[in-house]
Image 1 (cartoon, rainbow, N blue to C red):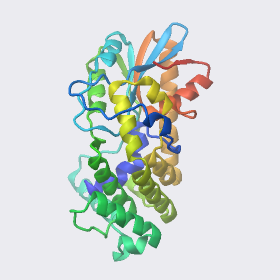
Image 2 (image 1 turned 90 degrees about the horizontal axis):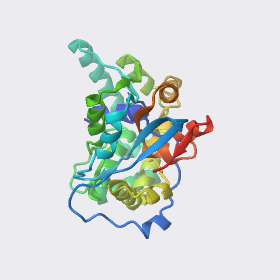
Image 3 (image 1 turned 180 degrees about the vertical axis):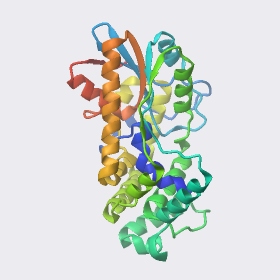
Image 4 (image 1 turned 45 degrees about the vertical axis):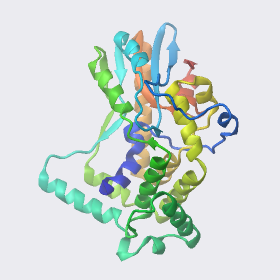
Length: 325
């Protein structure tokens, strides 16, 4: 799993349309109205956003991570739309697979070298003293029982700590919501527009190797700040999403520490072009659906639905009518 962490970090938007920019958290107003969920049962989950061009409509499910652990949500809003949808737009993704076992072994060996600290150094060697002190304090709080692992790159250490911090506040990035939506899309009778970019795995690892030390350290610091300042707001956003509180969802900002890291790590030209290509392909498929089909369905991260520079805002700027729930 550790071998995959940095690769997933760098390819997150390619797989789940992650954010390329972050906003600062502002949870003061929402904190007074959103209380932690204590009910037991099925949560309604988010309602659907509507994009229309005349009589043609594209319905969009807003995905969110992290969400409450053990989330049992009701997918019927999505099911009702998918029953009538003529086409669905799958989540954009990168395909970089190989079935050749020898080639796979070489790729894993290259990834292992990439994810370990260079030259036998430790995190203390790689990080500025003040940043390392913040990391150690957070590690003591969220991973006190874990053995030290100081021979990894900063990005790997940050992801491990971030996951432990989410676990501490009963949140998870592995809710299964995305898998459920993909399964419903496959089971529908709608035609599927897949957005797939083929890349050689060796090429992706080579691009990751071009990430600068400055970019990685800035990414590390961003995740530390998120753990220090945004855990409570994450819970409030997750609870609002789970119960379908649209007013709260619209009121929140959506700071995205991992998205910020992705923007920094995408400074390598090949990865930046990959992200831009995926965004452009999704927008093209959305416009094609709105031009050709009465009912369509897709899924996007919540930030892309509500941010002023998100994908829905881009569709609105192109003349489509965007209607929140």
